[in-house]
Image 1 (cartoon, rainbow, N blue to C red):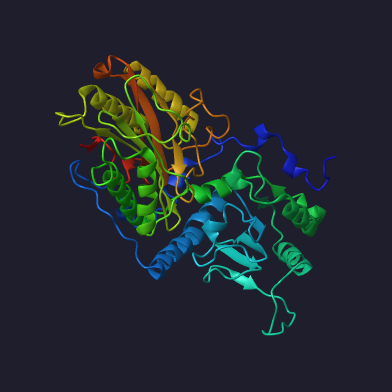
Image 2: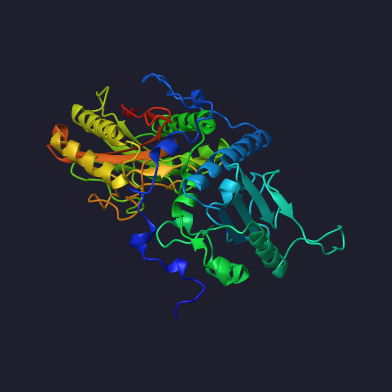
Length: 479
């Protein structure tokens, strides 16, 4: 039986989301206007320049940098989003180890989990600023006004808020501010907007009572785009991380790591995992390395066992790195020279060139205001008109590897992605440009090769598209 306290939370899906008609692109193109835009200016990286490793600063300096980002997101980005979507109050409630996906984007880098129960209340003020309250937990480095109980504690003057104290205080806060609408993170489609647990929702709605529960509205774009939008101030750090990714793959796909006829694909995987850990980075998925040979298209990651790398092999890796809660997702190609060869065969170089061309086509169509599905359709139409055989499966990236925002295809959904492909392209969002082209290789007796590539790119404030570091346009060579 439907809970009578949930009338607004059971709206039909087609009434909940209409991204392409309900968004003002102009607002988002000017959303970060106060930012030092020079920090996000395109970088020119010569094609033949060797990628360098960039060690991370000390943990203390990392935390200071991340805290600056947090302050900017809460004071610059979130107020603009709540105004754009006409949100009076946003309530996030979560318990320890059951954190909302938004948690990392509102928490200090020195906070690793919610505290018992943490309730965060954002209220839009008449001057456009936000009141930020924490009913439980800490102030997150001064970003919230944190409340404690009036009860004395054995070793401190007051105890932490707990149980009904939190819910009663929340009710007082809501009654005092009397918002016309309240957004809760409940959504059946967008994981980033669905962070309110079922038990938390029951308790929260009971605390709000019938009057304020009736004012709850769904606005999945608030959580999704708060997570998705990138600060220009993040780009200098992200660009260094991206260059480190290129440096690590270049070393992995070289004779420093690979001895043809001896080294296995698993050897390379674990070398890459260990190297990134030695550099102070971590990852968000298990690294993949595999090979293609004449007559065999690549197996899916995780399918098949380890393979001894041989001369003539086309190498591929899918590699993700995490630093300071910034994620990368990169796929590169390498070639193992046969005796007497000084470069990859022309057929394989054409395959890589086709993949580069598809990257160009995709970026040219990633215009702010279009949906992911519209970008996909336009890209595939031009790709086919140019005689390229390929597929596109691109996603946002940032706080998460598979980030918040519009999907541009899936590897198994080239006709478009329902709902998640209907989200709109926005400036100040990073995307992992993931795709492949399949090309007959004359040197393989016309059998095909799949050139799978993935590189980070971004939409700048003016909507222009640029590589974060650079793309791969030459094979990594092993001899």
